[in-house]
Image 1: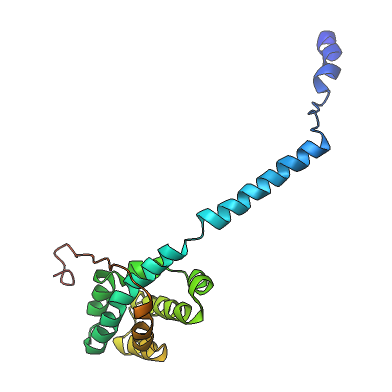
Image 2: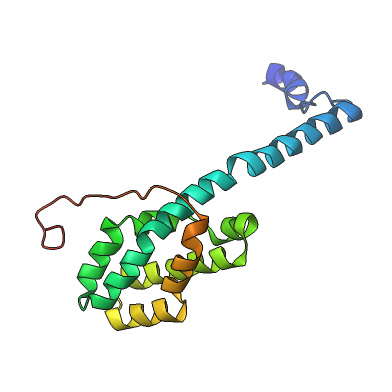
Length: 167
């Protein structure tokens, strides 16, 4: 016990890390902040070309979807159209704030409208409610108006499976 007691003070001495000199510490902090800003600007924000391509693809199919919604009376068929047309995927990939920053308020309003429509469809709301939302947003008129400005290939998904909607 006496030997342990003699060793205890040296074991109990706290470890002190060597301090980095102040200028070097500030350079490291500045570099970390710069890297974070570059990451946010370049890697998390899609380019104008990418947004234009996505918006062009969306516009290519949204007008037909809106017109089909006028004819549908079954929310399951409208949900299938939402999926098959590629609008669900295209709507999720477009962020209204990114669209507004690159292309202005009107295209952003169009994207916001379709995000609301998508939420109604995915919630299984009645077709009448979805039609009213499309009309209130002037979705068809906006699609027709914006379409000449944006070019892009529509991505079409072919459904597979044995369920009624896929057939």
